[in-house]
Length: 339
Length: 165
Image 1: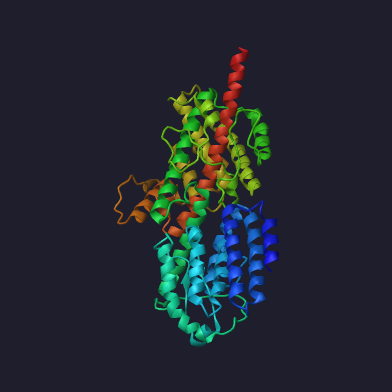
Image 2: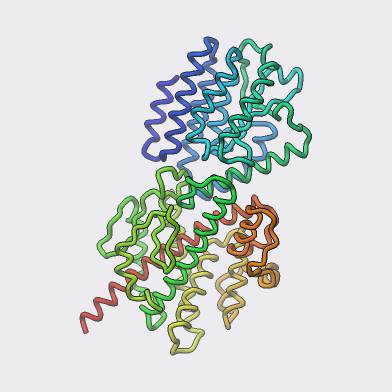
């Protein structure tokens, strides 16, 4: 099973970015732990994991706009019924796989602690519900929900503490489960001790949606990875949008200067289109156009990794967390720079 | 992946050239630099929104905003037949200028973001706002990339023609 996972991973290495690679390795480690800790470990679980990986690789290769639709379509079913891993965002894979740790009962707390240690480096990026459903749950209809992190703290550490705290209580309920039940999907509902009424569940689902969106924004906006907290990320996003808008202003002024007749050198359109199509992966042009189109950052998981890292030569300095390659652009922009 | 972004850019540049041409025909020459800059920016904004031409709030709001700026509304309408929208008036009247009564940092920033993204003030749902922002950023990015390319090409060709003289 693990070999299968490795081969799948290597297949998709080229197209995947580092964060997902990290996640896969993490999942691999988790699986190794799971395998080592429970003799009963179900091949079905690992098989599911492989399936999830397969589906997620496909998702990663799709267009960004289809991903937006995926976000839209995938939320509802997830939280209510937990069907359809194909619809879930790529993070869902990790949530499912990490939830396997809940299965072996003997050292549940230990498992969670292992999970937390692995989680911390990735915790900033991963905001998901971990859902585990057990037979016990079905009987007693108690709901245990372990969230990878709540929206209140995207830092991650306090989340882990929450998880561990809840794990102690949930340990009792899982005592009766001696074997890993055969499940299609693994779900955990509300955390024990938390409100389980509809409103808070819906509220939690809504917050999860928002945090997932924030994660995608993190992928697009450069430099968001280092920032935690909604306010900080919103700051970055606002900064980025403002900067892009300023760039548009600046570039339009520059074009106005360069083109006394308000024509865009129409005959060059075909040339420019050729640029756009040929530029995939290449970072140099015959002309000193600086349009390198390599991945935005190593962790960009959206296919908008084609967007080059933000280089701005606009009047105000960009924030320090952005990469800047403004060499050739400086050369070309010296014309219209003062206005 | 990459092709989607390229397609976005190609779409944008096609529309931009059309829009600019139409704007050019409808305005009298000579124009000074500022007017040219405004025309370029306006045409590129319209083109960006038209390239999106989907169900996004920001594209419709941007079109309506640009439509009111142009002296010739037929220009905008001709290009974007679908862009008749009910948001038009509301969008313009709702512009805020930094007078926030926000209670927390997140709320304050959300308000600021709403003011940046065209049509953002009309979006109540924060979840939807972020989705709109994502989309808007993609297209804004495409706009910037295309303009930068065009500017670089123009500067080079400009240098060449100067040398020939």
